[in-house]
Amino acid sequence: MIKANFKVTADVVIGKIDPRMWGSLTEQLGRSVYNGIYQPNHPLADKNGFRRDVIDAVKKLKIPLVRYPGGNFVSGYNWEDGIGPKSKRPIRLDLAWKSIEPNQFGLHEFLTWCKTINAQADMAINLGTRGIDAARNLVEYCNFPAGTYWSNLRIKNGQKNPFNVKLWSLGNEMDGEWQIGHKTAYEYGRLAHETAKAMRIIDPSIELIACGSSLHSMPSFGSWEEEILDNVYDDVEYLSLHQYYDDNDHDIKKFLSSSIDLDSFINEVISICDAVKARKHQTKTMYLAMDEWNVWYHSKESDTKQKPWQQAPNLLEDHYTFADALVVGSLALTLIKHADRIKIGCLAQLINVIAPIVTNNEGTPTIWYQSIFYPFMQVANYAQGTALKVNSKVADYTVSNRVVPYVSSSAVYNQSKCEVVLFIENKAAEEVDFDYKLADFPQVTLKEATQFAGYDLDETNEKQTMQIENLKDINVNNQNCVNGKIAPYSWNMIRLSAISHG
Ligand code: AHR
Image (cartoon, rainbow, N blue to C red):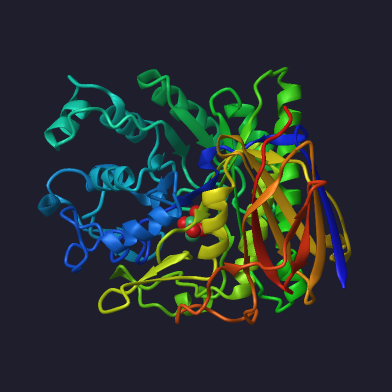
């Protein structure tokens, strides 16, 4: 049997987990907004046309932040199309996804929906087909109190007080050839700098995210970050990174090791940011926004066969397997491991489109949860507080010269709840005997122990057979050691009541 030993010490910490770590991307794409968030003719729609079943499901994830309207969509989007009377809004071609965009859901609807789910907005601006002018007008529309053309128009459109959108993304994946208005690093760096400058003149309190690489494997990775940071280091608080994983090689050991690649990606981006910082004699630290991450591959082939120019087509509708849930869980643990530098995270996406939540346009059930919903729900709810450094001694295997521990873990101390939460994932096909030492936490007692386990790796959850269960036979002894057994291929969470010495 595989043995795994872990140790945390109360005052040996990585850093505070920013509450925005467990956000999401919600793009005007496929059935994410239309027939997802917004479906006025649905029996469960509220007065705004928002589906109440979706609101309830999203609230289970306590989503703190929503990045919108894209994604690739934003690079061809005119934000003005989505304001004012709905009957007057134009129907447009969305070139990013070859779809029809009716613009019935726009800025006010989005920000009202954010309020309904208690989330903050991360407003992405179009730096593909547009630039400084559209961006500065949008900031004026959203955040300027009154008395100017755009702020008065906002008031006329029903919003008296400024929306006060605090977080803004300067474009989307501008390094990608597929992006409408794709740019070289120099072109993007200059444009992002000038756009940031104009936006900040209107509202100096905003925070900005610059586009980093859209995949670790991009040929321009590294040089892109260096060159754009030369232009925008002073202007932005965050640099983005995006990453999706797949099992196209049908190699489960490799697929389950995806988080090792994510870990390298993050470390490399941090090194580049710090090298630019040193070269610029800067004192400011660049934080990271992992504002797209997930598994994405099941739907790619069928999407190529979709008829173009439909409204709300079934695009990117991956049906996730249990293996995907394990990968999503381990990616989340990697984010926790980098809580000192990653301040923003967005699971991509939220509803229907590569999403934890799926809706049916009609009939019952109206909604169902994918396998990936469960580990994400647990981190979103319980990975709040301070990430502790975890020392581990675990058997490992090797994939492409990379060492992969069979068992990975993160530990979080939530001081306000006097709680330590241990997340433990087993990537092995056999049971694991684990032992967790919590140093400098006197009086540890067990609150709850759960497992997500026992499913075939390729099982999906359309029938809603998957669930989180109690994890039995966990012992907490008076030396503050927690031990027990975890199932093969399993995601586990142990909540302990604990107060540190400090
Ligand atoms: O999330 C789906 C797409 O993935 C987004 O639109 C884009 O930013 C990324 O390539």
